[in-house]
Length: 95
Image (cartoon, rainbow, N blue to C red; front, side, top):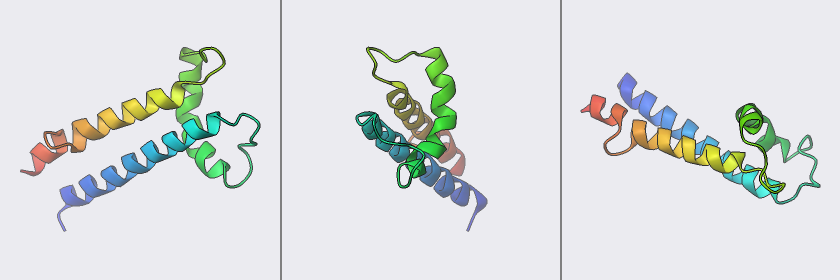
């Protein structure tokens, strides 16, 4: 297997998992009474918090609603499309 194929495949999975975790984090924001330090919620909270914490300092919650996971879904989707999409940089390099 070529290294670029492995990179493309691995990066695609990593970005896909992060997008899924951010979407699950959006759902968890609907239930503020949940303890994010307990299983199974910490499986979503721990990998996403390093991204969300600095973003919250820049963008405060609007009306008590944390919109930072929504912003990160957009950012990660954009990165995935720019790198791995049909006209993405990595796809062009593989041709």
